[in-house]
Length: 259
Ligand code: ADP
Image (cartoon, rainbow, N blue to C red):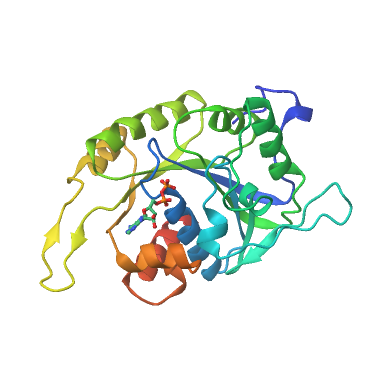
């Protein structure tokens, strides 16, 4: 984003952060948070200094996915010290509230929280800050697109038509905000039966690749439905920490991001 959009004082780039990559989706439930957590871990394993900001303020998933519950400290009452889990510097509104507590805020409060998480959190020196966006094309996307220098965005979708319809809207929103889209990720591509090896395309086939081709963008990864991915997410140990096929797939994705 050029500096032409807003005066400097309203911008919200965390100092010391080399690149900021937003991870979006059209629809919820397609695995955006799962992909964000695992990509963050894989980038950290590849030696990068990685932060992850959970910007899904109404449905923060990252505390659960990283297995952290500790409230971040604010010794000076102004800045917040983020937590570090599995090698990733992490901040989420979910760390400030009990897990079953709803955030019932209007836009301005939401934007205040986002601004705080970007600029008052001591992110330190990072090679990359990943931002796990809420689904859709709302306030958070607009504010980040206008007020931060996003290096780029990644859009996650399942191959299902209803997911792709909304993913196209997310892509359109990034184009309007002049945020370069680095590529698409297809999640829940297929399910391979652990008994017989049959590959079932539960959510359809080919849709994300077709859209990537249409837009001239890379399909960065096609990730299967995988039990360990789901279990790892629920247990607070992202599957990318292990040494199985999914960890390898995320390591490959991280390599592609680094290049
Ligand atoms: P979103 O952030 O898009 O709302 P989540 O990452 O919260 O989606 O994923 C929704 C649910 O699907 C979670 O329960 C998660 O564990 C599960 N999930 C996501 N990706 C996969 C996958 N590749 N294989 C199995 N389960 C997955």
